[in-house]
Length: 190
Ligand SMILES: Nc1ncnc2c1ncn2[C@@H]1O[C@H](COP(=O)(O)OP(=O)(O)O)[C@@H](O)[C@H]1O
Ligand SMILES: [Mg+2]
Image (cartoon, rainbow, N blue to C red; front, side, top):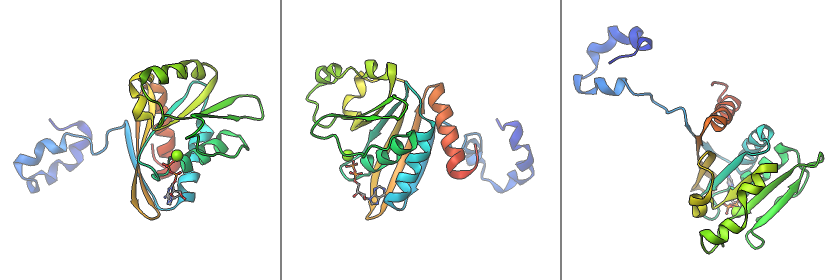
């Protein structure tokens, strides 16, 4: 069935093969996802700054992507946008870095790469962190089973020397709002 907003293309329908009619009935984008190709590390940081500006206590950002796909680079932007002057480094060896906001809040930057199993991940007490802070997790896919189902997920991929593909996915109302706002910041549309 064609939706009302498709009425204006009805007079063009004769151009489309009948077998393709059902494709007209599906949205081109689903509203829970967005893709962005970053062409420079600084562009990834600038996007991170916009996202960081919107974050509040209880927000969970999960980052998935191979080594060098830009996860830590994105977190550098997120942390400065959130408002911390702290330098962001990879928490690979310490598992968790904590960044401080001048007004006292904290942002936990977790690296799940070295966690051996779900039990070790449980010990980190991510739910506890979320009660008072923002949490950003690199290699989040490794501990997906112990994370809240509602989250903002970013899948990153190496495309070329300076290019990275970023796939955003929002689960839950709060994160749909975040995604919509980010889409607005990047493309000027909602
Ligand atoms: N468009 C881009 N976005 C993010 N990083 C990029 C980009 N282009 C090049 N880079 C470089 O790729 C590397 C990404 O490393 P990093 O952020 O530590 O990745 P990860 O944390 O996923 O291992 C950095 O050296 C960064 O400067
Ligand atoms: Mg990293």
